[in-house]
Image 1: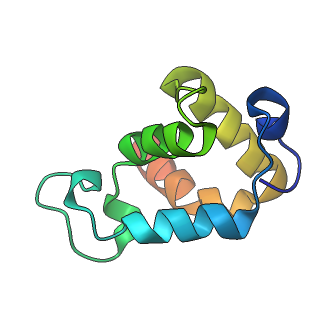
Image 2 (image 1 turned 135 degrees about the vertical axis):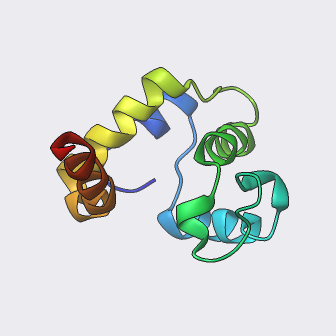
Length: 101
């Protein structure tokens, strides 16, 4: 992927955002990526991100890099904080609501 990341260093593969976006878009209709009974729009709120990322890592690394949720989730969150903090607004709102209770 473009930008500040280590994907190309670790996998030996350089990816373009458009390539990854196209792959993710092609998976939106696959029921295996939805939480039970949540296959309705908006897709981004119901997608099983762990399954999608596992398959994404496998696909683009030709099975050389396995998605490790504890490690990669932290790295992805840190990348979002640095590069697209607005993408975390929904989760921030949920956490703020929970912490108020």
